[in-house]
Image 1 (cartoon, one colour):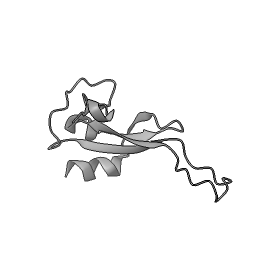
Image 2 (spheres, rainbow, N blue to C red; image 1 turned 120 degrees about the horizontal axis):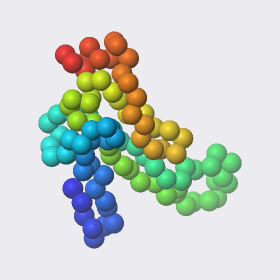
Image 3 (cartoon, helix red, strand yellow; image 1 turned 180 degrees about the vertical axis):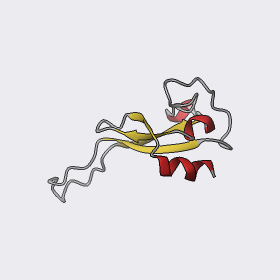
Image 4 (cartoon, rainbow, N blue to C red; image 1 turned 30 degrees about the vertical axis):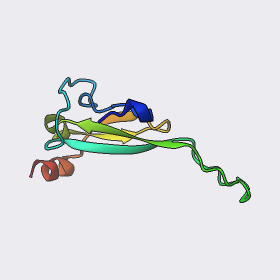
Length: 95
């Protein structure tokens, strides 16, 4: 999961819910969330500027127990925020 020679770091060590300490072992339960982070291209950037914005991908995991009652949203700084599921979404996750 982690390749130090490429500068990658593991972010899936435990459930993203700060109130939960479930360790991440497998993807067979829970939910995985992906977020693109980094500098975004400016809409006013000149077309001659051929440099692509620096971006990276981070993954966050909710264990199966937490995924039944919360989800993850991302704020303006792309930081994960755990929020309660709406009642209709809870029944969809449970089935």
